[in-house]
Length: 232
Image (tube, rainbow, N blue to C red):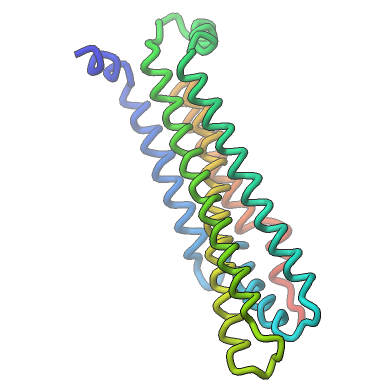
C-alpha cells in the first residue's frame, strides 16, 4: 500500500509528461533515420559520405589517413561511453541521498515530496543514460568490425574482392554512426528528463526544447546546408 500511496502523488500531468518525452524520443529518432527523400537529415547525408569514403579508400595509398580517422571515431565513442557511465553513477548516488533535492523542493513547493518520487524521477534520467551507454559501447564495437573489414580490403584496387569488402565496411561504418547518434540523443533526453525534478510542466518544456535542438541540427543546420551543396 505504501508504494501505491507514493505513486498516487504523481499527478496525471506527470504521467502525460513522461509519456511525451518517451514518445518524443522514439519519434525524433525515427524521423532522423527515416526522413523523406526531399528533406534528408544530416545523419542520412553523412551515410552517403561514408559510402563515398570507402570508395576512395580502395584506391588510396597508403591508407594511414583512413586508419587515423577510424581511430578518432572509436575514441569519441569510448569517451562518451565512459561519460555516460560516470553520469549513471552520479544519478544513482543522488538517488541514494535525496536530501539536497528535498531542500530544493522545499523552496519550490510547500508540499513534502516523498523520497520515492525523487527516485522515480532520477530513474527516468538513469534509463536514458543507460540506453546511451549501451549504444555507445555497441557503436565502438561496430567501428572495430569496420576496422577489420577495412584491413581485409586488398591493396590492389582491381582485385574482385576490393570493392565488395569496402562496401561492407561502409555499411558497418554507417551502422556504428547511427548507434553513436542514438547514444547522443539519449544524452540529450537525459538532460531534458532532469527538468522533471522541477515539475511536470518543466519536463514538458524541456522535452520540447530537446526536440527543437535535435530537429534543427538534423534538418535546419549550417552543416546540412554545406552537405547539400553540389560538389560536381
